[in-house]
Image 1: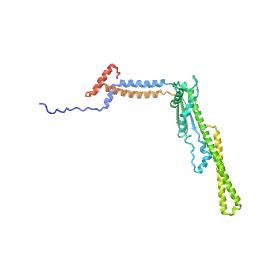
Image 2: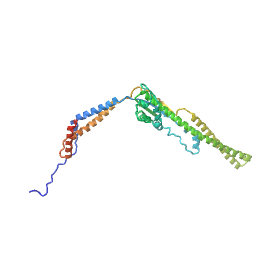
Image 3: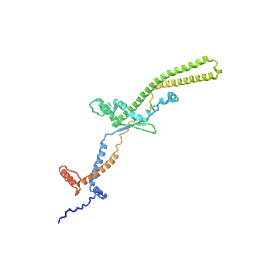
Image 4: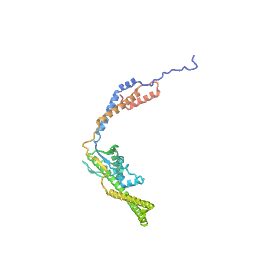
Length: 349
């Protein structure tokens, strides 16, 4: 007699845990796949590194000089009156020059001039690099991007305050020429900026000198009128006090005028001064040989990457080929995959 209620079927739980021995067994079973993948990837990495064009790197280092305006007499005078005048120290910092060297303002000038390259003659960068674009502005823009992304590298030293410039190209003389050009452009940019600032400062101080002269004349007139009206002022304590106040005012105005005149002369000198504002510590040199290709490093990275790829591939192949009863979806996938392998050959370990 059949029971009214069907008996409950006891299913054995599936153990989804993977033991270390099973992992080791897969690695041993698919060792051919792992070794082959490792060899192929490492060989490919070495081949790519070896076939890559040789590059030549030169380096230059310089240190920015302090701004002369920060030490001028005008700033000292302003501080006496409680006026805080910015000195522009941040603009003269190594970080500023690092940004300047990779700015479009500097790189566009370096990209526009022709260079003498051995075996190529005098040629523009965009022609030497064989940059093909629809218009010349687009070619120029691609040349600037090449300089910024591939050729120019800038680093700064926090403790020493130096800026190190490295140029890497496929031509040794071109690397040296670009480095020299960038240093020249930085010096020219700073010189023009300093002269422009000095001209603005001179114009400002010139107006202040005229005002200071009028203030001094007014103070001297007040003292003169006091002395004319009070010829016996020494006998009166009140008149003595008044005379000393007027004399202090004249002395102060004389001091202000003297300081402004000195600052005015300094600004005039700075406006026409053409000395550099950077100290070159290392001039660009002609690279003695090509850069190290680092074949050993490429081989090691290829072995590591290839080994990891081989292990992943081994487990993928093992998962595809291992039978797994009780999972209809997986069995359906394996059957579909088997049909695909018959039409497209699959290389397994």
